[in-house]
Image 1 (spheres, each protein chain N blue to C red):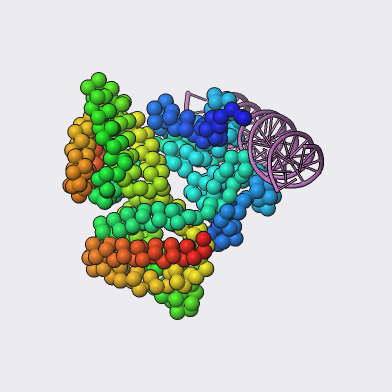
Image 2: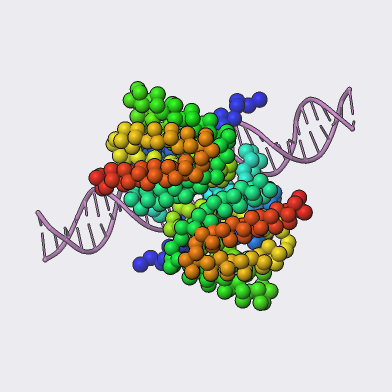
Length: 217
Length: 217
DNA sequence: TACAGTAAAATTGTTGAACGATATTGACAG
DNA sequence: CTGTCAATATCGTTCAACAATTTTACTGTA
């Protein structure tokens, strides 16, 4: 019986909480995270907090300098290029070899429709997160647990970069219809066409993000 | 002046040490790792050891049960299939899109030659690790830091499975010449042919590993 | 003997404090 | 203004403690 686990351990919960603040932009890139301050803030011990830090460091969200402390990772053009290179490799391949009746396809469709509704309401935050759901579903087509976990990680890292940019409409809105077209191809069994179109999408998106990024630098 | 960094922090070094023992087979799958025993063994505090454990858990090498402790991950057929699926996706793509004069090609050649020498001396352990080097170099062709890190992780996990098997000669020796042929294609610029050949390699290797694994079950 | 229930022991989860090592800050002399 | 050196703050690691939980040992009973 036991009251349900309260969802397991402390460190992973802390990590999740911090991750949320990171992609929400509450913690800004380059900012230093003091062990003492944060542990007091969360009412946990320094030790527990450090365990959470390790997890986030391994995910590339935090960055550690010996004897100086933890810092919020600062996205760079190099990291954006790296991430998009991986996305092209993984997502396009997943799509090209996909089974058109895979369960993840339903999630892709749901994400497209949710994004369209959100666009009507100008809820750009929602458009963005539905876009992420769409692409996570693409990766899911490959039916690999480890690949899903890896993708979730670089997606979180990418969101850190998005957080620096200030125009979510520009970032996601133009791609809703492109997503829809990709989905059409997939559902019709034209997986290669879908993959080709996705490659266009990703290249274009990368260019947009890099351009926005360079305007800030 | 500080004695040289001895390469940074304690926890990562511990993790590296334990990782070594895992792929060397000293720690066997399913085995429980006592915090008290290991921390005494390494002469470090329980806290430091736990930090190392977190890292390895995230890599899939250890597995954690609340209030019961850390266990060495037990490879399953599912995990082997998952890993080979990823290898096919990543390695083949990296090869297909490779630049034939990429620096990693030199490492591939070195690995092939070292493996041939090792085969002559029937040093099967060396044959195996050179094989791993060869494939890591293939991934390196894609020029992605994050992809390299991810591959290193699943490679370590795969070695855990290899550790269960008892015939390293069967596992690696047959593939040396296949590796060499792949390299020939790559160096000649026939990247697609190289990729196709690698796909054959991986499918065959997966079948061998799964068969050996099922004989143990 | 077999077995259920309970008490005792061991292990993990988390905390708090301590101390050396390193980095940052600020004062001071030149 | 610059370089040196002490003072301060923070990190890295360890140790000791206690609550929560699991495992083990033991007991009494059928």
